[in-house]
Amino acid sequence: MPIDPHSDIEVTAFEWVPDFARTYVRDFRVRWALEEAGRPYRTRLISAVDRPQDYFAEQPFGQVPAYRDTQVQLFESGAIVLHIGSSCEALLPADIVGRTRATAWLVAALNSVEPMLMELATVDLFAAGEPWAALRRPSLVEAIDKRLGHMSDTLGTRDFLEGRFTAGDLIMAAVLRGLDATDLLARHANLAAYQRRCLDRPAYAAAIAAQLADFRADAPIAA
Figure 1 (tube, rainbow, N blue to C red):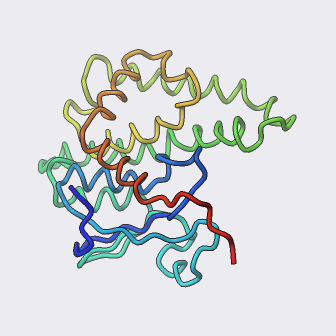
Figure 2 (cartoon, helix red, strand yellow):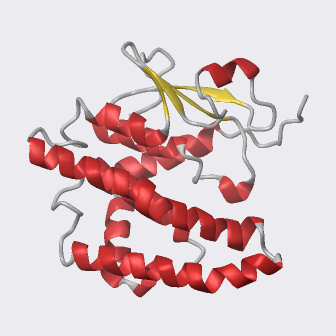
């Protein structure tokens, strides 16, 4: 759905990030969910360099995204996606079994998968060249590969984690993008195909395009 400045739904995002972070900032997860749900939204852009002090009253850690509609004000991308899914069967099935299983996979992506991938990003990107990072990397890669193997076994030949696309797949596919600079996902062919299947959805492409369109070209200067 196009961004609508008159929408009741507002997503807070950054006005600029460095090139390596573009398309990865987590507001894209919320935009993706809204695209899947067919709901227009407006954006409020804030500085990542000099975050407004009053924003911490909405998002205690000053991160993005934050979200508001006529009913709720939320932070944390997983919680926001669950809220959007609560009234959208395209994201959370109406039946209790399907809904709870999708929720479980969403939480698993954030709790059982993403922390390891974020640690790898720290080792490879933010701590590159540090002696401790070189020591940590082999065991971390081994642990990630083992976890991906368990996921691969669970997925098997299914198209999606629970047979049809849900909010659990949305967040899992988004989280697995943390491996984009590695060959770890490619070692598990069915998982790589699964992620590609999720990212090939038109709603994902629309979300990424909308995020990129919101970024300013030049870096802001901190006050």
